[in-house]
Amino acid sequence: MRYHAIVLGVGGMGSAALYHLARRGRRVLGIEQFSLGHEFGSSHGVTRIIRLAYAEHPAYVPLLRRAYQLWREMEHEAGERLLFLTGGLDAGPPGGQMVTGSLRSCREHGIAHELLDAGEIARRFPGYRLPAEMAAVYQAEGGFVLPERSIAAHVTAALARGAEVHGCERVVAWHAQGGGVEVRTDRGSYLADRLVIAAGAWAAQAMPELKTLAAPERQVLIWTQPLRPERFAPATFPIFNMEAEEGRFYGFPIYGVPGFKIGKYHHRGEQVDPDRMNRGSDSEDEKVLREAIARYFPDANGATLAMKTCLFTNSPDEHFILDLHPAWPQVSVAAGFSGHGFKFAPVIGEILADFVLDGGCGRWDLGLFRLGRFAR
Ligand SMILES: Cc1cc2nc3c(=O)[nH]c(=O)nc-3n(C[C@H](O)[C@H](O)[C@H](O)COP(=O)(O)OP(=O)(O)OC[C@H]3O[C@@H](n4cnc5c(N)ncnc54)[C@H](O)[C@@H]3O)c2cc1C
Image 1 (spheres, rainbow, N blue to C red):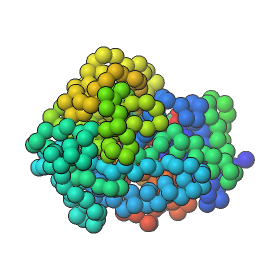
Image 2 (image 1 turned 90 degrees about the horizontal axis):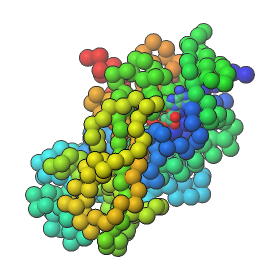
Image 3 (image 1 turned 60 degrees about the horizontal axis):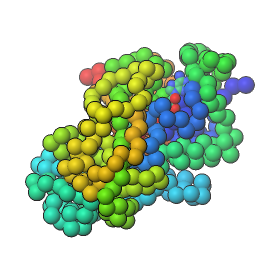
Image 4 (image 1 turned 180 degrees about the vertical axis):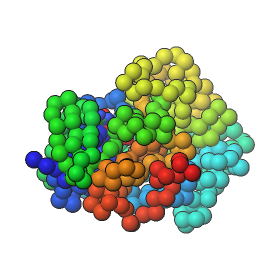
């Protein structure tokens, strides 16, 4: 049997691609090396930030508008909530990249926002204790999505439309042949017209051309017991991205599991092999996050409840890689999400389905995400 498309990797992006292909009536097979919903990749840990004002680059905003729509559609389809709005703060020095980048995207795309000083932030959101020299852009559309539930929802909806999914099966090789592809796994081999590579931290294993372009990096998250839990509820504590002296942090109100959750971008700068990464955490990991909690969120500085490791896959400019394979147009790739991809998962799935069906994606300007930018 020959598939229209095979999706290599059924994580955040692969599950969404699978769904959008099945929704458009394609015979599609998703192959995942671990059990669905596993904790070895990039899409676990209960919550992921979503925000519309986007300090990273204004070009993301149109994709985000579509992502918000698709999140709501998937909630309807799945019959459960996947997206929660809490408001969001992009905080940092007023002249820093976080605040100026966020303001730029608001201005270019007409996004309603407020610029708050540290005193106003503490009055409105008392869980925050930012120094006087910091400010923040507040956006009402900030919030979080649920990564594990999202993967389950996309896979369930894809299966209901006839998709096939093989968990616990590892792709060991693929070959382009006669306009299609042959994909070999540790269990068998399959033929398809198209291949979608959505392998997360394993992207460079699946496509060696990405070796220097999709670099896996170890990350650590912590959940702590708030001393004043009422200050860290979804109704009282907006999600945040914060450019601080110590680095860039992000965090969430209490949701789903006990505790206030915080992480630091590029935690300890550890480039890793995803098959050999240390998935435990230690006191050094904790210290990096504790210092920020003590300084900026002192009412959350109670006992440690949980820590988890996770993987970023960084591209050199930290923008996504969304493109066709340079040699084989029947192969498309979504990689290098650089620690900020999950909120986009449904729209990335839609783009990947466009790649499969049309050999391109006419509906968006994807210039920022093309592989060719690294060759210049
Ligand atoms: C700690 C942390 C916090 C983050 N916070 C945010 C946030 O707040 N907001 C946000 O938008 N983004 C955030 N991100 C980034 C976001 O989670 C990732 O961009 C996104 O999860 C990447 O999805 P993916 O599909 O590329 O990877 P994954 O979900 O890891 O999926 C890749 C899948 O491919 C499978 N695979 C790989 N190779 C093979 C093979 N050979 N055969 C079969 N299967 C294979 C893997 O097992 C895996 O399941 C965060 C990431 C981390 C680690």
